Image (cartoon, rainbow, N blue to C red):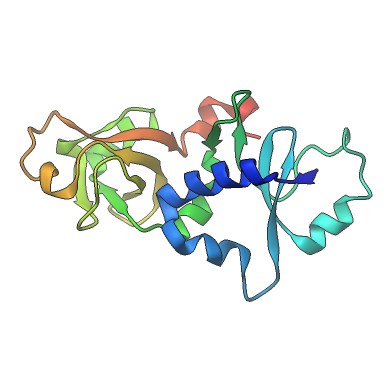
Length: 180
């Protein structure tokens, strides 16, 4: 377990900024206690500093997980967000998409969101922007990237993809062994 290097921090924060923008500050400067990001086996964990200090007594090989896994770095130093970060992304999201009930299951099976399944979308959402996907009952289902801006979505054919799938809560079942 070690702090992120400057390059890793830059890559990680750029990816987070696609989804929560400047709200990254709220993740680190919390009113209850200080939190930080740590790297363990190419995975980035969000953990309170008190727990992190206690974990230093555990050997690196024996430590499997610590706090909440936000994602992992690939061998080429690209960062992939994991579904385990959804709770924090949803809390501070700038742009949101609500899916109709008939579009929830296809999204949870890993498919993109079509115009026909789009319930609502945050105004002025740009193209290729990270968004959090909600059901119409405001339950966070996952996250993705918009294929079109809000204005373009209004004029689309019902079978056109509007949001590209990135991760969903169905991954807990589909990829059990790889989630953490």
